[in-house]
Length: 151
Length: 196
Image (tube, rainbow over all chains, first blue to last red):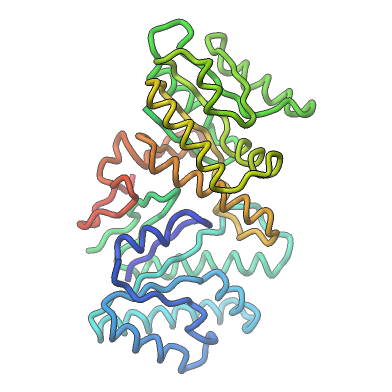
């Protein structure tokens, strides 16, 4: 698993496209509702048919997930479970998952509680994904720096 | 030589950019030029501009160019070192005051870079990093952010050196100690991009 993390319009998509020209791209929305057991079934099939699957659109998906689940700890655990499913699918198929993740935690604390939850969840998800990923890239102004290298 | 220096508010961007411009300056007495995109619109702005001017010292020639940044270089001797401060404000004036679209703004920036290279002017451009907050909900703000980031990516692509400033300290993204990162931002195949 590789992560490309950066702010809005930082150039993450262009860099991933250049790096993985033959990848299959999915929107996180196609993963379905968080916590539903069959949500990842279709996605696992994609990984079996493509060597690299890029999943983007996480900010919107996380915002929707917050509306479905009010308990932050439970929601975070469900996201970790999804990461685990992806890692296991990588092992089974020999494919690679690339996540394009938003950095959105560097502003002032939002006044609205739902925005604070959104920001918290995005930050936790980035951390949980980064500690499980083989490589992590930070993207800024169309340039990338490696934060974590493959072993 | 083109350099792009960015960071958060009060991160020390201007001081780092001034130091770069001084290092690359020509030996001529008029070799340092400050290209200000700010207008003196109110008392607060006047105070900010006065503070920056005092901090820079006496050896800078100041030119004001709220929009026509490439044309401003016509008044600069070849071989000078020019510090443009800042692109963030310029982008807002191009978009909201002049009402120009993204492509027009990109062309103006490209003209600036082309003119600097043709006339062997060292150009150091300062801008603010604004894109790592929650995505803006207001459509106009979102358009501005996308426009500014498009300019940032263009500039980073064209620049010989890209520097991020945090608390007055420089983090090199391109040029200097970052030769392992390719110019198009594509990570190296061996996964050994610079993480410093």
